[in-house]
Length: 419
Image (cartoon, rainbow, N blue to C red; front, side, top):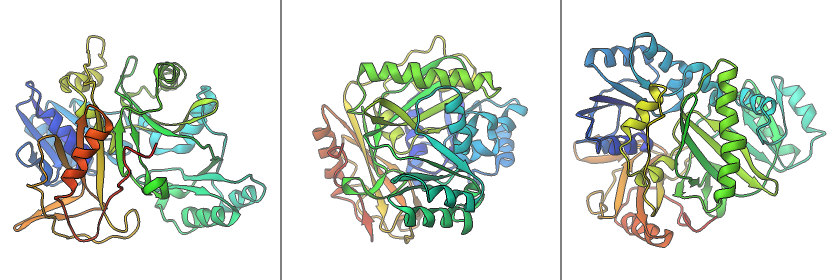
């Protein structure tokens, strides 16, 4: 079969790496892809937001299954477009992906379905939001309603910080239309974790647990990023918590979405926090996490294609999944300045030397030039490995990183240690 993967990051590189191991797949295409998929996929330079052109390409090439990596094409309705052309695609419809594209919808949905989450209020008016903040208890969290690439969340310690967040989001339009409405919610402290499942609209296959490191600096300090590393499994999920998450969060979400005419097929990602009362949902995503996917796929022993096809076909009934019992981890190499301003076009040195036997290197923000591979994003490379324990996996990863360099390289050195 022919498979198309949409996206250009480390998540998509990892998906293509895993798909390439399937005996069911003869040819892989990537839109737009990156240098990391060279030799695995045929790349086509189409903007992932141009969903009509992508659908036309899939039709012309006879693509049997398309997998959507990033959230924007989903929010734009790429699944609906493919369905209208009788093209098979893995991912939720536009109506279902609202669970990620609107935090206000997501929070109201959780409230109506008794899904544990932080107390919240939503605002369309900056004046009303600021008036609310003047009487609020700090710290609290302010979130842009729409998609903001993981950067639209502000943890505010006092009124001045909160007013500044409202100003940036609602008045200065830092996130465009995504900031026209905000969610203000109580601050919950505790370890965070990622719980990712694949659904066919009725049934659910849980993936192995993982934990990502969102803060840019070590010791979980500084602003949120798209993710600076990940480990799997999460050290915070035992059998009891797993059962609670499935019964109180995942199943009610899949059932509730179907009841409101938004049947969810694809990846449901619950970003969770564990406080004294148990797991609560910080946010839902409608696609694979990044960089959690990189760590998770290293542990997947089964062929990924029957899982993705089963979801797209609304038939996960007979699909079984086998996992590697070893742990895995991922460290993100970023451009200094990320998630703020950063420079691109820096030559990456040592890529060949860094390819150790135990390590997989996935490209996240790179581009190919005649004389080598250059940086082309805030998050540049994902260095991933498995091991009998975290010490072994992290040792392999940091050994590999020692061979890599580019101007203004930055990475956290505490991945796997900070919990």
